[in-house]
Amino acid sequence: MPSFDIVSEVSIQEIDNAVNQAQKELASRYDFKGKKYDLVLDKQKCEMKLTADSETHVIAMADIINSKLLKRGIDLVSLDVDKIKPVGGMMMSQSIKVKQGLETDVAKKITKTIKDSKLKVDTQIQDKQIRVTGKKIDDLQEVISLLKEKQQELKIPMQFVNMKN
Image (cartoon, rainbow, N blue to C red; front, side):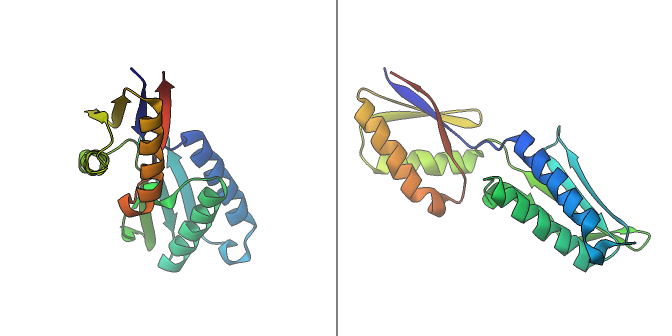
């Protein structure tokens, strides 16, 4: 039976590349000369930590990292941005987590959207992805096009992988 999986994954390598580009840009910017700042990526936790000596510098760092992520094709909706907090020693910090996989409530919304479309397919939530199966490949392709249209509404980047006939 034909099937495919709906996932929401972000390439950590692309994020690492964007962080490296941002670090290079920060090193060459005049408004960061002589200032204390740090931009670190924890690949295991999928989290970026921005630290600087003022809130405006943290905001500027976040803008730079966001522009680098966009240039690399990473949707900013997949980021979970915390508030800027003081960390002591006159330093401010902000952490940005990268969402990996579909959260349960989002997976349920996607499943409901597919069921409401009345297409003859079955959906099954499996951990952080959704498996969609159907008798006809055309039905599966209709599901993909439907979800691409609804992607802005659902506010989550989705990829469609493991298409099997």
